[in-house]
Image 1 (cartoon, rainbow, N blue to C red):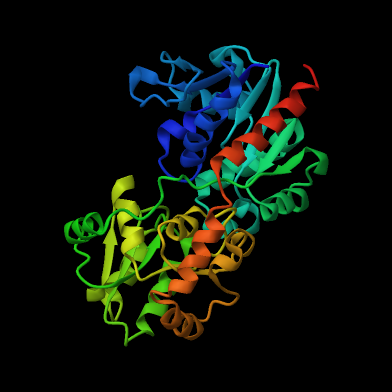
Image 2 (cartoon, helix red, strand yellow):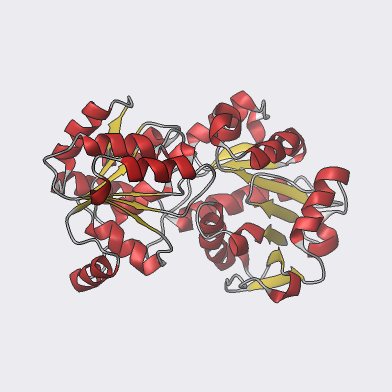
Length: 369
C-alpha cells in the first residue's frame, strides 16, 4: 500500500493544520516501511522541505500551488495525482479534497466553524470552504475528525455518511515540556515579561474571543501582573488591538509575536495561569500545550474543549467576566490543577494518532480503485 500525503499546509503554515501534518507524518513514516510519499508545490524552491524517515519527497516546482488550487475550484481539473504521482491512498489534511483520477482518498476536517459560526471565519476562506465542502464529503472515502465533537458536527451539519467518519484525536508533541528555570527567565527578560503573568496563545481573530479575556483581566485588580497575548495578527485583528490599547489596564497587557518553539515553551511554563476563552474549537492545541508545560488552565467549553480538556482544566460554561475573574484567582499557580493537566495531556500522543490514521488508510485501501 502506497500512501501519499498532501504537505502543502505543512510548508505554508506553522500552527494549527501545519502542526498537525508536521507532527503526524514522522510517526506515520515509522509504520510505513518505505511506502509513504509527501507532496507539496515548491514553486521556485521557496518552501522548507518536510522531513520524515523512510518517506519519499515529491514536489512540483514548475507551477505555483495557488494557480492549481484556483483551477481545481473553477474547473475541477487537473487531478492532484498529475502532480504528485500515483498512490493507493491519498491523505489531504486541510479540509478539502482536490480532484483525483485514481486512488482512494482520506481528508481531515479540523472544525466546522465555517458552518456553526460563520461570522468568525474570514470571508475568503468561508466562501472557499462552503463552495467545496459538500463535494469533499461526498467524494472522500474516509473523513478524519480531530475530536468526537467535530465528528458529530460533520455528521449533523454536513450530512456525512457516519460509516466514513473517524474521530481521531490529535496529539501533543513531547517537546512541549517546561524548560529549565534559567531558560524561562532568559526568555521572560527578552520578551519584557517582568512580572507574573496570565497567558493566552492564538491568532488574533474573532473566534479566540480576546476582547472578553481583556474584560476578565480588568476585573482582576488584585492581580498585580500582566496579561500576555501571544499570537500573530489574523482576520479582523484591528478591533482586537484597539481593545488592548483602550483597556483600563493597557500598560499591563503585552502582545508578543513571532515566538520560536523554544520561546513558546518557556512562555507557557512561566505563566501563572493559561486562559482560553475561545468561542469554538475543533480540538484545541494551546491549552493542551500549556498543560504539558505545567501551567494550570482555565478555558471555555467552546466546541470540543470540554471533551478534549476534560478534568485537566477548569471549564467555564458561560462567558461572564465576573465569574471568570473569580475562578481565575483560585486557579493562579494552582499546583493541583497543573498536575491534573499533566496527567490529562499524557493521553494525547502523535504515535496513537498515527496508529489510528494508518488503520483508516488500510480500511480505504481495501476498497480498491
